[in-house]
Image 1 (cartoon, helix red, strand yellow):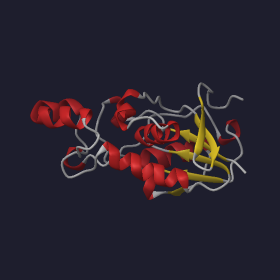
Image 2: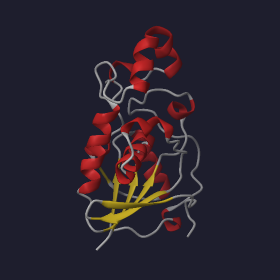
Image 3: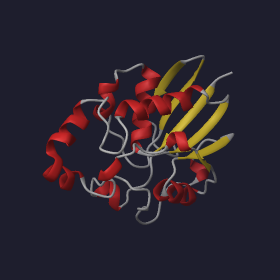
Image 4: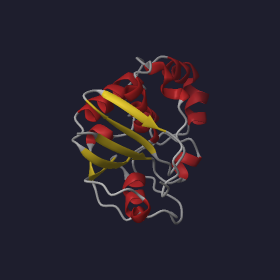
Length: 185
């Protein structure tokens, strides 16, 4: 049987709008115009830990458990600061972090580490449909793994708030469905 995964990044909020390294506390703005009725029926719902995924799931009318393997990329001491603020004081470190998937954020983790963590979770996904309200970097990591892309492609994938990225597969072979709006067939 096939595993089906619908990845939904959170609604827009201050941290996303300000390009702020997420610290788990910032939430979302205003109402969400999509509901659970607009999503396919799922056997399970999982969430990235943090307020904006929890609040997005609640706004969608979804109840799910947080999965630690779906946590956002740990930006270490940069958490809570904007990319511009960090670049102004640690420009070389930011440039290296963005260019080298092996280089961890100071006190945090590397892009490769988050990709490995998410790949491990993806390969353990049970049969049936799962809806996952997850941070944009989790969507990137899942797509990198599913398509067998080089980890260097991670930052080249744009993930818009409240969109659907669908993966389906079995036995380590995944397919990606692009372009379906939330609530559409």
